[in-house]
Length: 458
Image 1 (cartoon, rainbow, N blue to C red):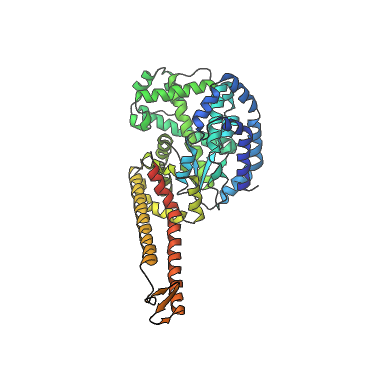
Image 2: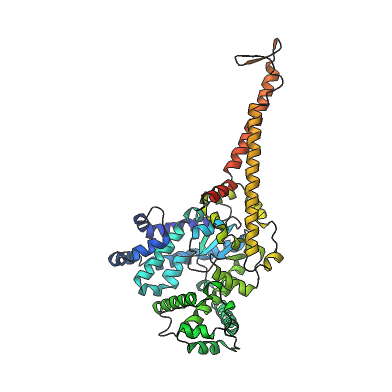
């Protein structure tokens, strides 16, 4: 089965299980609140939970039948690809995809339904939590249905079961070991101590039972992601992760310090897994928030130009890009303008420049300027074409038509000059038609979607 057919069948599977819920929800699905609302009603959540009993089995069977062929097609594809990581699925998959697909041919998203119903099946012990997550992420993918099933040369969005479950045991062991070794070095930097093994680091943190104890021991806060470099944010993260650990029955009891180091371990193993997948499929990494980008960039030391641009497009300064409609992405491909638009975004950027910009501040500024220049040029071009249409239609009267007009027949002197006049009119008509078509094409093209998105930003 081709990737296009797999995509159609994947959406059909989501519809079979979740369409009744989507119809009960608001017309414009807010995937986050939808999951929370359904999970909050005990009697309803029990009913919904029962209806989803076979989801894990069905999604597992679906990928067992189709994953090998899909993976091979992705490996053979010569399109520019990126793979999402950072959470079970993007916070807003539609916005991330639309922005990323302005530069990349394909956005690959690990299947969140497989992740939750198969890999994280222990979540079912907490029924409301499980329902909240599974409904939220199913709705998140369903919003992408038009892009997932689009008939384009390269799949705009491809959902696949990417992760440790689909990696050989030997490679999985290697990835986990690399993550642990990386964590040992990282922990030594954070606490300014020389931990020779992971066990030494783990034993050290096992003795820490409070946030106060942890913050006292942290020596280099700048080694942590910027969003958790204060006590309150760090406590919120570790406490939430600890609560999830109890649901997942990670172990009977964790100290505060153990929860912290297990969280860091999960992030660094995810980095190793993501690097492996990107290498296997010839893809770049993509994230929708800064923390996973921090961990990946810390490991790679610097991004390359493709990764930097794709990630830079996610910045809040370019939030308005997410306002473009999904059909704009199809237009970009149908008009074969994607490569031209890539070159536009790359203007003023190169590998050496982005390697010296790990936080992407200068990269984002350059992207803003490139988009601004593109829009200004496009508006200027439309103005010029419009003037040309007006000039031809209203002012450029053929020189042979200098006599009087008798009905529809022009007169030159005392003679009718039909052949010459018809020729001039025909030429004039063709010019108007050509210019009008050029104007219509410019006003219906991808850049116009950008202009509209910028005007519609809130």
